[in-house]
Image (cartoon, rainbow, N blue to C red):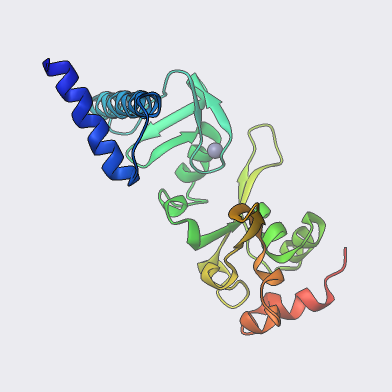
Length: 219
Ligand SMILES: [Zn+2]
């Protein structure tokens, strides 16, 4: 047996062990192509990270990246001069300006459970933006607003540490996954908000101010 054929046979055996069933040659070939693709992607990502880290040594405060990237803070797509990369990650220059002005910290976005976004509040508590803005205006809810470059607001965050008595920790309001049985098989479909899962949802968060307002909140 040639070295290549031996390698291929061993790969198929390893894949069959991982799948816990026999694979046809066609299935094994498809699996191998997928593994090769993932391996190439891992190599590409590793190379890209090493290149970025090397450049960071020359520019420790950060620099613009080439091409389009997703901002790790606001999620928007930014490009070339609109990007900023430093040891804390990839950001758009609007969010980076908010970090420089200390409106938000360099690392708050790394802990996803430490804050709510506008979308989180709308989805998790079945609210609309009008009510949320009213609560901000009344001082009930403390927001960190990232100013847009041309005026207005670029993004808004609600840190739990800023709203300790008002917003519950996120583990209390985790979404559930809806399951559907089709042809005897269990299929995962979409997330369901926590308040549709529990019989008395407000009891879970009754210690927090938002629970009192959810009863009466009207658009
Ligand atoms: Zn951003």
